[in-house]
Image 1 (cartoon, helix red, strand yellow):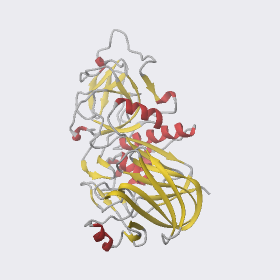
Image 2 (cartoon, one colour):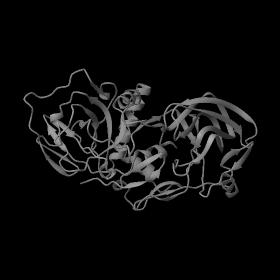
Image 3 (cartoon, rainbow, N blue to C red):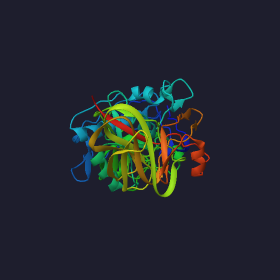
Image 4 (cartoon, rainbow, N blue to C red):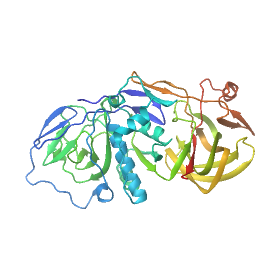
Length: 424
């Protein structure tokens, strides 16, 4: 069954598209990928075995789970590998996620805002890593997504550095074109060079690389030796070797490094994700704030950095009237994406506000709208939740008079600032 993928508008930090595919098994002599039967390639004179030079696989450092998906859930399986490997790298212990259960969290209809399917079966729709990041950052079960880093550029050395540091890389690949898959000496392979976003139709997790992987092991001829080693949930027989020539998806389902934490017990939040079409821009500093009413120990703050890598921000904690400053802390953010900033000194709170000083762009969730024929993005805001500082005064972003003062026609809805509490 070929995967579905639909190009969408700019949304939630990045350009996105939906990925999804049915699971297939790879037999001994043939490879069945995305419904296309692929004959086993001619074996080399001597079966290739990787050496130590130019080779890395996360499974030598942490647990890498290879699982077969059902329905259009490749995006959830790839995301889970990214989160699981990141957790073990950070904490030195394993965690196992149930990818299919995340469909109910992300596409569930018992929420007021977020991404909603226009049909009943969310398993068949497909999705993207950005949906995972924006939804799970508000918590799921006993876990909270605490990081979703956007890969800064399509540079081989950068990908290698980030995989070693952050765990598996979630990414889209062009997997649906006939003839691009191979099966050589027991290695499942793929090579497809394209700039057409419509062909970038599958999600995998990059867990390593082999700089010397033979270019002869690809049905679609490769110009060079070398391959990315990926976990491909549409096969459950081993790793998937993607030629260095092949296109990784930088125009749609953007590469992400996802991470979860079990250190937090509650997430105070008004937003369901940030919309790059509706962010607040200015030349210089922008200060926004969210007011919360939840008693407990505030131990971290979450927010998105949309642009400007290596950005310095300031986090201020106020009383709920945004008059008395209770705490302040500077932070340096190296990468674009979603981040949590642990407080140097956790603070007891009840009725309070979190304000963040951004450079040039402040993230907001923006207006709801249809994304395509299968999904709708809904946002909700109320008075007294989100504010922006203009001069020395705070203005409610729910008030249309504030929008007029900012020269905006579109509603911002809520600011993208979250408060993470210590587990009780």
